[in-house]
Length: 199
Image 1 (cartoon, helix red, strand yellow):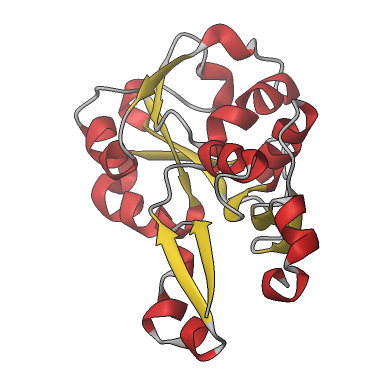
Image 2 (cartoon, rainbow, N blue to C red; image 1 turned 120 degrees about the horizontal axis):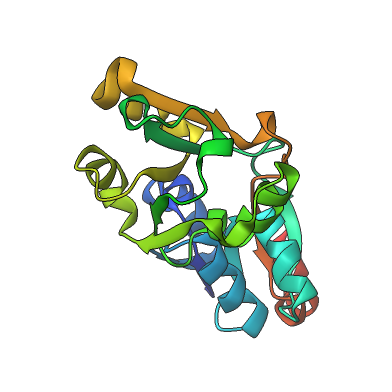
């Protein structure tokens, strides 16, 4: 049986639970997703042969020497969004300077923030990033520990349910930045030796 380790997010969990990888002779180990930036670093360094990461962040990492190859794109449009409380006075991205944005340290949104900020005429250093766990984003926003948080649109309904009419939201694709979203990336050395497995 071929052993494969993937730095992944929840989207890939159903297949091994259903036995699909085992049926194909792949001994799969899924690691908890801790952000696109970390997955990109691990794959680029060869610590994990395969990972799941935001393509925009992958390209930024490649420009800094991390080596990876995208073999499959999950989202054709960026699923990245930003959430805040309307009652905070924030109306949109132009109000972000001086505010605290909470998300995990290795989150792909941090990697791409400079590009989003520049696309909107904002100094990328004008916000303060606060390290919080991915599962604490909504609680941190509700408790006003942070002013803004990031999330993929697939959790939009949860934010809407919890925040109601006080929910402020913007989709990155609507404010000037729409890179491919999550993509399956592979370490190029691993890909050369295991192309049928990676495809």
